[in-house]
Structures are given as C-alpha cells and as structure tokens.
Length: 242
Image (cartoon, rainbow, N blue to C red; front, side):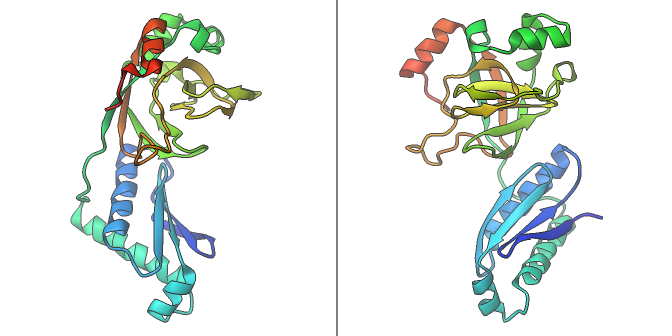
C-alpha cells in the first residue's frame, strides 16, 4: 500500500510512492517535494527526490518544541501523509515543468572506451548505438552518487545492458555511460561500473554556478552527437549551456 512512510534517521523519513520507474510516479514525487517547500513545517530542512520516493529531512528538536509532540518522526510522517492526500484530492501539483537540455556528446573511440564491448554484447554497430542513444529525450529521475550525477531514463530497449562485472577505478569527467535501462553522465572523475560510450564537454557540476548542478529531477535531456573537433572547441569555452 502506498504511500509507505518509514524513518531512515532520527531526523529523516522516506516517503515511498511506488516500486517502479514511471513518469507518473515521479511526477507525484516532485509534486510532493514542491508542496513541502511551499508549506514547510517548523524544523523542516529539505526534501530529496528519487525515482519513486522522497526523503524529508528535519530538525527533530525543533519539531518537538514547536508542536509539543512525543515523537517528531511520527508527527512529520503524519504531516507528509496529509500533504500527499491533499495532492491526491487536487489531482496534480502546480510546480513548473522541468527544463529541457541538449547535451553535446562525442562518441568517437577515444571518448568511448567501452563502445567496442557494447557493440559486441549487443551485436550491433557503433553507429546504431549512437543513433539509439540520441533518438529520445531522457527524464532526469534523480541526482546522486556524486554531486550533479544525473540518473536518466528510459534507454531504448536495444541498449539495455547490465552493469559491468568489474568496475573501473577511474572514469573521466564528462563520461556518458549506460547501464540497464538508465543513462548517466559523470560530473567528475571517479570509479564506475557503467559502460562509457561517449563524453561531453558540458560541466554538470560547477561550484561557481548557481545552482551548481546543471540538471535537476524532472528535467529533460537529449544527447546531440558532435565531432572531436567540435568537442575540443566546446571544451575551450566556445559553447554556453542553456
């Protein structure tokens, strides 16, 4: 039965609205997150959306003092439950739609260290991988793993692959990768277990930008193939993200 609400810390609960990756469920997650921002309770800190759930963080001491409650966790859970039921009664939220982004990606061999393995496992050509990967708009479902890393879907079924059996120690920043039915972009160098099929010059996370993360849950992303020459030109700063 959804929503399923349970504590994850003394000052945090998770509100689970489903058990599948679906846009309709994710819309409810984002609507609930927006409602928490619009109607915060005393002690509210932040909400973090994921695929089908929302984590709500709060100051338990402030909640207890403000509402004279024995259990801050139970009070917050009841409050969030009431907000969810109000959303259900209304039918939809009033938050603005997510932004649309076109991300340039170079799929050439030097930028795509796993392309050969991907084509071998999928029994297709690199051109087909590129065509499939750039054929649709992806929804940003959540940001996690490292600052600014977008978990996006859903990949065309022809590109579905399980994660690597052995993660690599270092994936270069800007690497565009796939795993299962998702695609993502590594904002910074890190270990990784997804198949890297390209690279983008776009900065996914920049501490000098407000907000630092380029993408947010609910945004839409489409990949645009570019040549190595264009990649170098964009890296040199001749392209501005919009």
